[in-house]
Amino acid sequence: MNSLRSSAICAPNSSPSAPVSHKELPVVGRWLVVGSEGEVPAAGRDATAYLWWLQRGEERKPVTVFISGTAMASSNEHLPDEVAAAKNTRGRMAVASA
Image (cartoon, rainbow, N blue to C red; front, side, top):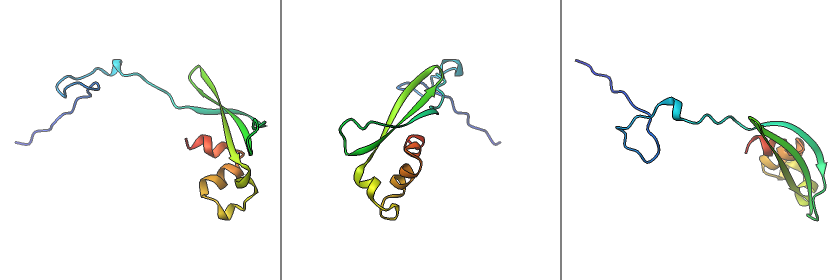
């Protein structure tokens, strides 16, 4: 006779024999890029700064992406793909991939 094994969802630091109801698990949404204020002052840094707004549920947070002056002055072919993508998207790719 073939038997199927069932698995239970367990709370952290609990034994596998202590199942947790799905009602107890918090549902945390993803952060979404909801806006940009474009280029902003880099506050004395040798960099270009872009301000993006992220939101998860009712929570909204600013994220500033700094791209060094050296990276901005360099040809994309000599930069890591992630840095070139951040330059080409005014920092959005750095925010979206984080």
